[in-house]
Image (tube, rainbow, N blue to C red):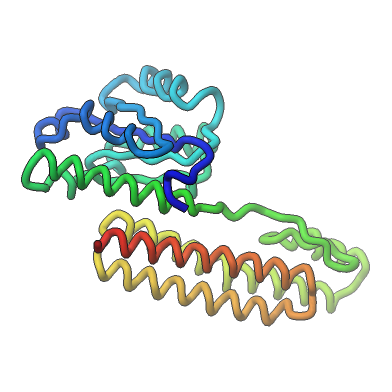
Length: 262
């Protein structure tokens, strides 16, 4: 998916202080240029403003309640300058972290002239926005399984059913499925997400190699869990759905990598 195919605008927050202007990148000019990207809306925001004023401006920009569209935060060192903003979005407004991307403009500010700085910054935001549009946060899904009920990621209901029926073999089976899901799917997936964050921040070859290894670990773990639930149609369908998502995630990562090295 490219930006022109998005059905709703993407929210871009440009955090600016004297550091951008001092490095030769006019924040207002840059924000106007970012606003020219397809289906993007931009809010320039000075992180030095009082938190209450920042929140008021952000709420007016995003609307009441939690934002329903992905958010890109662009700044020099956004982890530091956007720390309060990130907490507001993810903790208080419950924005799913999968729908939040940070763009560190440091490499753009290192370009030799103002035109190159602006062009590099725009490209970084475009790549991040395109990658973010591929995000599909994992959510809990209820899956019916014969006499028992398994909640994807939490088999407590199935365990209780087995215990109530004094089905100790069933208890062992669902416990193994739960442990396998955590060990072979969820834990490797989280490690893959961490590796993706580091690669998106640095775009270094070593981080890309690490991300590739983490993706392979997710594939291998998912294959093991799929073998464990073989014969249980609903769980096999869930495993196939996760596999499709991981495949899409890998494709999006490859596209980001190709763009970063173009």
